[in-house]
Amino acid sequence: MNPSVADEGVPVSVKIRERLKAARKRFNANDNIADFIEPGELAHLLDEVEEKMKGVLTSLVIDTERDHNTDNTARRVAKMYLNEVFKGRYVSAPLITEFPNAEHLNELMIVGPITVRSACSHHFCPVIGKIWIGVLPNEHTNVIGLSKYARLAEWIMGRPQIQEEAVVQLADLIQQKTQPDGLAIVMEATHFCMGWRGVKDMDSKMINSVMRGAFLKDPNLRREFLSLIPKG
Image (cartoon, rainbow, N blue to C red; front, top):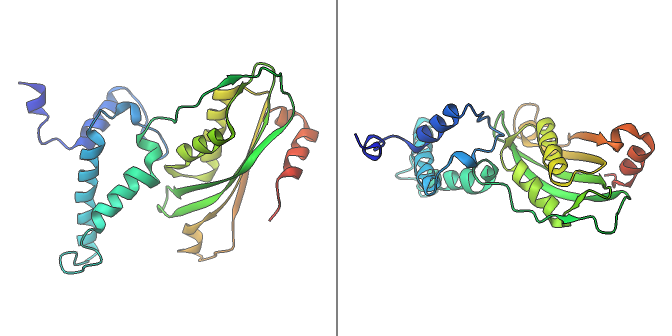
């Protein structure tokens, strides 16, 4: 039988999942799966998610046929997840131009605050915060434009995330791209799963950090970085 005929009627999510399983690749909430999505499939996945969202609204006993406010909600939610909030799962990493460190820069550089937006993988509630990135380059370090740090952060955060894992993923990515002597990342964020539900505490925030290389070994460098991050 022609494979294209055999594939007719198979949901595109099933096809993508089978490719991932065949390659023995993980597809957790905060993983990127762009390499396993073929051209044109995201449009079909959007249609599939829309249909599933219609089922969710039906199960919530919302009359989308007569309620003018929700008659197109399923499509809007599907587009929000695939094209915006969780886009970092479905598209490849942004192209980053890297330059050699021609001037042999070796002083501390800090980028931030970079505003980041994500959603917790437990409740899909918004996570909104700021990130500061400290880099200690060496003569072999690749130099990237300041705006590129924001693009990389947006790509990593554009998935269902747990903050502790998100900063590690971002650190791994920047380390791979630039190869500095030291790398430090601090993230401060508000989690709407605490303010919108549960304890309903809108004032609490989570702050965590990742220290690599020189920032881990040199307490003076670490203190300098932390002292230069604005408080409050």
